[in-house]
Length: 153
Image (cartoon, rainbow, N blue to C red; front, side, top):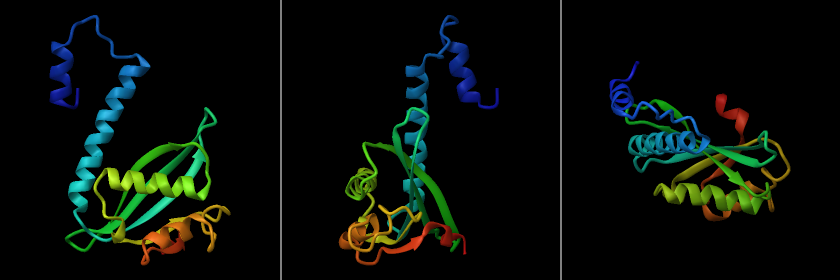
């Protein structure tokens, strides 16, 4: 009732259509997610940015990784955008590194524009020799690690 376009679609849809199956709902959410990502990408442009990453297990016991992007907009305001959540087969540093780069490259972000990376203190994340921060720092030499809570400072 709040969105005229959605209301028009629902009025013109067959009355026996309920759109309540999980497959339909997931498809609708995927379309919304894609549109949100496109808007963020347009807002983002080719600016330098920071990534904040955290992983957790969902109710179905699958590992998920959330990716948040921080950047400064044209007006000089710091923006923080929840960008994506992806399922990962494990939480090994190399797996997370590959998934982060895949997501960023899929949306045409230049990984050389990463200026910092933030994670929690889990051992697979900040390890200076083989943790996720070390792997990203190998590819992006200006992507310094900062504990993700410090971005609030």
